[in-house]
Length: 261
Image 1 (cartoon, rainbow, N blue to C red):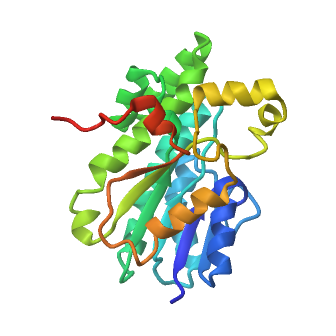
Image 2: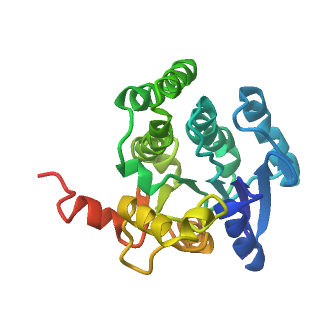
């Protein structure tokens, strides 16, 4: 049965691969991106986030949607990463939740990252979790000025993963029958990673940071398949999960003892 999916970041990378996969399965995809998609929107801009539900509803022909996938993200050592990766994703999912509620099988997912397990800035994560966008932007700018901008991206991915964990079981999500999950990709073969993959030294550098014993780095469609299942009708009970699609990197780094007593 054909479903209607909203995918942010649909013009490239994992977002595009997911849109292509779902369209090939005869689903209706409403892509959201800066330009060239069914809906043009800058998720770093609060005003454009606010306008998103109306644009999506229009693209859906005035009806609801069956799934929302918050894929859009950036990996810059700047406050833009905070605005898009955390606040853009949260705003997308929360703003489109009423449209999801019209579906008989609503689903939602967001792209986190393996980097959610890596070093981050605890202060930035705390401000992000508090929903304080001006405070988070200020902290990100301070980190960049201190030469610690590399901590911004993993901080946003930690915060969005924790947001999924805490939010997914609330009445407006689980209580409304809407599974909400995340995926945590390892190294994806994209233009961003291509230069490092071209040399033995670059590949060794990536492997040291994200060791992936199962087949190593992969194409975006690998993550797309996981997203398609999480947001398909078949997923009736998995919620609040961060599914690491990382070739085993999570296990290598954290080992088997990840459960509390």
